[in-house]
Length: 468
Image (cartoon, rainbow, N blue to C red):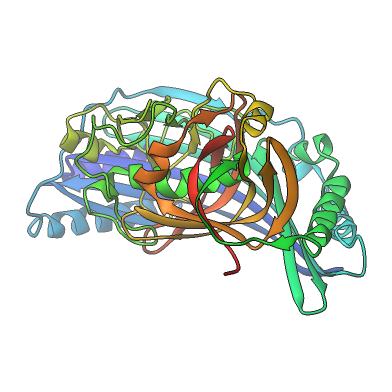
């Protein structure tokens, strides 16, 4: 059917055509305070057809997987592209890419559909119950998502790629209260693979740890403001930092100013080859890391994936590209295009974006810090439209005095500018951890996509925000 779509649109006169035929299985369970809020299984399948005519794009999707339905969708995609071509000032050109014919699968030990849905429901009710470690936990929330996608990508250049993907994750959150003070703590466990991840991780234990953390924050001291403080970021906090101030601004459509919805443009447009940080700053985007939410080997243009070097030893090296933006920049395409489902046109997206490793041990970084803060676990970002000024809150921190962790702190946030913080990085640990981030938003209409982010522990300088 995918090949039929490509062939039919090509015969209409399209210069290039690709089609993504996808079969989706989604399940969602939400439990709050012992009550099931949602328990849903959703199945859908359809095809998205993209055409290029006289330098302009057209796109149409359909769930009518008959030849009649596909012909109708292909005609619409062709007509949209042809009509748009009359108004395009700069015709689209595609960078050359090899057409691959292959098939691959995510490694799965326990198929999501082989675990009875009611059994999952009972397990997640138990996880939520484990969040309630004392009466101070006033609300528990457990959310589970399982996704299976069987996708065929075909193009008029001869590509024919099948990808069977499976993802599962669960987010656990506990809200605590003492008098007028409220706090919360949360953690997400997830991977590309099957239901086995919830056997590898003792989820009741994880939930109990989340509940105890939420309780402990009620006894923590409120952070005080301190300018230009030495801060050590754990890999959870670094995950959101790299996502917001390296990942999004590395998307080439943002660099070109063509995309600004939800995450703005970028301050480093035109700075490839320039030094923007210290020698200790390196960052990558790599979809080929198995077991991560951002895992794939070929993107939604059929381009073979590999590690993208975004920043190397402080020098801005490259961006995430589509075939279209790669042609504009005069570089090879690097498999940056993804769509959340067949209903949407692909966009340049992160996969697994992370800081590169260093040569320090985490303990050494703390021991060599006379005064500073260990900042742990992301909360919420506030970033300007060019990803230059940033403020990101954390779930907790510990004050460091003479190389030792001391006072436990709550209500923590850090703020700086991207170049100032990048240049301040003076120590990076050896061990990298990639964490699941299932809700990266981009586009209009928005596509909330699953990615991986993280890195090592990082030491730098930022302003600590807290109670004045």
